[in-house]
Image 1 (tube, rainbow, N blue to C red):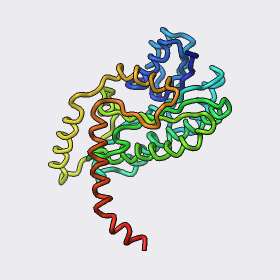
Image 2 (cartoon, helix red, strand yellow):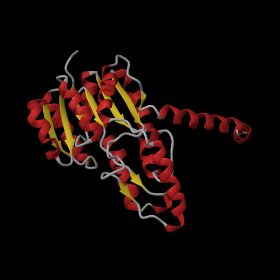
Image 3 (cartoon, helix red, strand yellow):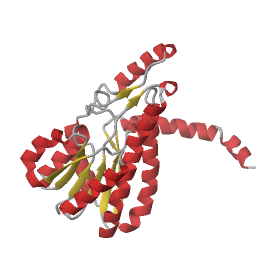
Length: 274
């Protein structure tokens, strides 16, 4: 199999780091971004010139374009572009500050958008490439206490589905990876929490218990590396793919409920049409 050149954001931990290692281990080359590239020192020492560490805050559009340009100039091409950088914003909708809401969208949506825009001219020119958007089961369904995170992933899902149709004629693929719960520190040190409103105390407790049940059997980020290689090596990669065993159950229940409601209210839909 031909060597691939990867550009991966958010490689200091979690999926980004494990996927970078998997690519490097099989002989691919990786441009790896992180806010603090010292987190990549051990990988640089082990893999040498096959790894290009790049310091990057994905909310900086100009820096995003410069980083992608640098990676392309360094390796001569780009084959797999992974938008993995992001974090979870916790808080009920009423509790979110303007800054918390805007920061979530800036990182999870605009960060991915700018990197995608920066990479597309190179992918179009070579008539090949694969954009991997790290979404979530939270990109197709929603739970309490992470509404702004859901908003960011639903936005990512929407523009990526449009993108897939736009770039298909150029031989460029788009895949939305939708993980369930994984031990990636997503809800740990990288997460942000809004100040809770006292009146929601009981509802917050119920939400925490529900989330604990959903994440009681978290997936292993190391195991996900083999899965991402299957996706990027596929002749016809999927637009969407779940990572983990739980998402398909959640998706089926949610979509069955949606269809039932839509059908129940179809007379009203037709009344509205006139």
